[in-house]
Length: 383
Image (cartoon, rainbow, N blue to C red; front, side, top):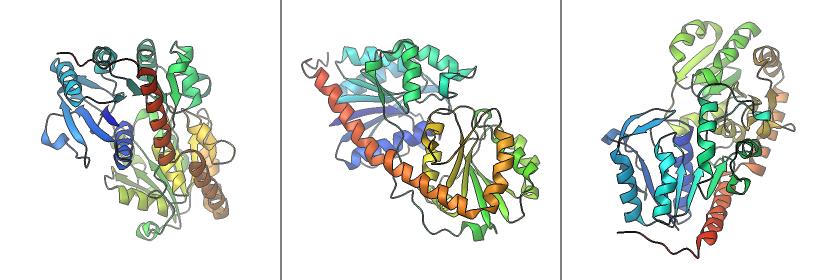
């Protein structure tokens, strides 16, 4: 199958990881993938083996949204006409192109699938104010123009349906993890950081991640000197938080770790993974930690609570996250048998429901369904 994938390769964010993992897996299964993404400079081009790249011009891009140039629409249309894919899959980048893409694909008679990543608060879909709410309100009227919209959880599907997106157009395919790569194994990270017990946060250091609640809880819990908290990631709040929560409190800031094997080594050496976010989609970092056999604590936002429910981890209340962590951190410090048990349950849950292999199989089935619905519509590539 020929697939035109429209997504992000930079700057690093969940959308970038999602696009990399899915397109590489599709290539491994013998599909032909062309990757269309925003790039201007050579440094923006991160090669995917055997993947044809098309660069789209832009004015500005960030981890949150992208502003294309006026020329980008023409480049995108001409590229799709040249590539002649069987199906187009857009990992939505919060860009104006997201709204004109259905019109372009309709003109070219191309089936169109989208993945809608935007995080949300949680059960009951009580969205926080700001960019998340705006994104849902903005996108809902347009998502019905796609043949299918992929979301990560049933909760998110219900939310979009309530906002007017036709239910038959919404497919639930959660994030998935390569469970061979992300698995329990040997690590010398504890020796490296001189830790008996190791706790880890991995993600952006940004307001929506609520990292300060974790840091304050750690400080107030007065953890033993041989218990260490590792913070992996960068973001706008890092410069203001790091000076106040430092090695004095056995907190180690590693910044962004680009080397995937190093990130796996850190997870394999840790005991507990904590994600105190106030909004999420479905955290790939959480799934990676679970696959590596860590005991996991995460707030009941996005689909994260759904992932950990029924004993696969500890689900935190967003209103009392700091006080809960203040109680739970010493408990997990002093009872290694508890973290071992939760780690086994976490990996078991991933193996049952969140493998990358299973994800790709479901995606292939969705592509086939969409193509079958379109099979009687002849392709017309225009002049």
